[in-house]
Length: 176
Image (cartoon, rainbow, N blue to C red; front, side, top):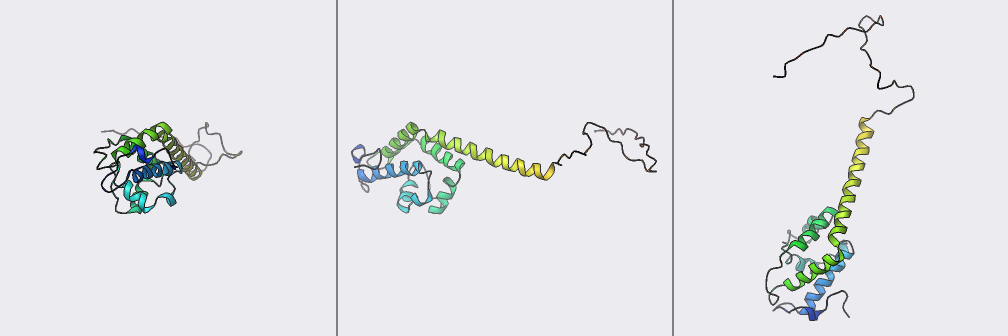
């Protein structure tokens, strides 16, 4: 029994991979997305095949690939977007293009892109709110009951401390 939506009868074997290998890759790919790209599911075998599909490159090694595409919600959204946009070149007798097409179909049906984009948007908003709170705590002065009303004009103190405000002459400067 298949562990996912794909069965070997849907795919054409290549010289180096069986139809079952193709179905396993497709099912592993979808399971990986279902599990929110958990690091422990990103095996060497999965990475080796994935780095040869959807126009991906190795990114030096498994850690570089994972770090580039799968560590943050915005990266995962870009990963799914790339998966959906890839034109799947080749002949199924020589490439995994038939599996790529099948994966794209299921990814669209399950609406993964919208899910990951929503998560990325929520993560960005959360980070921005935290930054706003940090900056407000740093730069806003807390209002106290005895503080003066911000709408009242305050006059600069007089140099002779007589209590009379100093007259300040307007300054005109050239902007050019």
